[in-house]
Length: 158
Image (cartoon, rainbow, N blue to C red; front, side):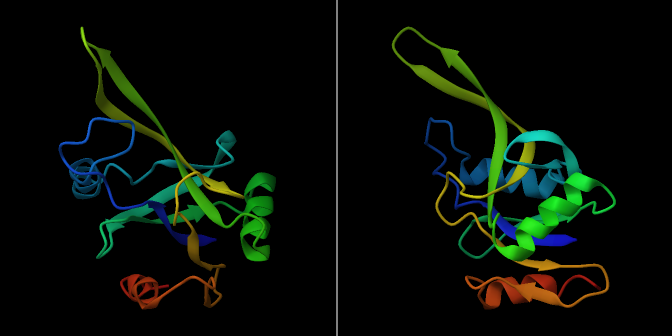
């Protein structure tokens, strides 16, 4: 099964010092191809169900990812069913942040992506699965999908 969804809302400004990704960090991840091959999990636990195939920033600056779930495994099959049935409709990033301590404050350092999870309820606003496609099936748009989502699928020969 292929999934398309918002994995992270628009990034924070470059001057932001915190745990969320900045606009610059998201842009660097996309341009370097660092998202490709990132594992997909459910609820941030268990074995990998698949990987990220592609990532891009939409017009609002939100991080969009195309992911492939391996339905040859029991876990992948179950997760795909949860997506189809709307039980798991959100996405959540799993990453680490190198926090540095200075005399008077904390400074967020390098962030490292560990995985993207299919979840029942994501922690960040707007991080939803917007479309999916079963093998040799039509693209199914989730209710919140818009024309931007439909256009994103046009670049893939599915």
